[in-house]
Length: 124
Image (cartoon, rainbow, N blue to C red):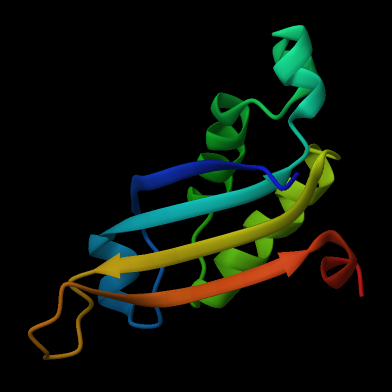
């Protein structure tokens, strides 16, 4: 059995960006997370201690989003390392981080990055 916990369209206001204007004014960011977690035991016990609490995941992601970075790649790396460190049950993470209306002179909804890492990849 393969199982995932997901958090879709988490919205944050943050000050990530290369340009000085971005760090002063800030922008809206959207994160989608998919966490590979074996939930078989939790299916039997009905106990949150036997799974990964998405509320706790949200708190960890929010704390990392509150720290300004120039690059979305850097923010994403911090989030992934934090989640693997704090939640030993997570085997793999797929993370999509998008910046709404990036200041690049284009008619665009969002731009960003997407990554998929296993716990093994993250420690290499």
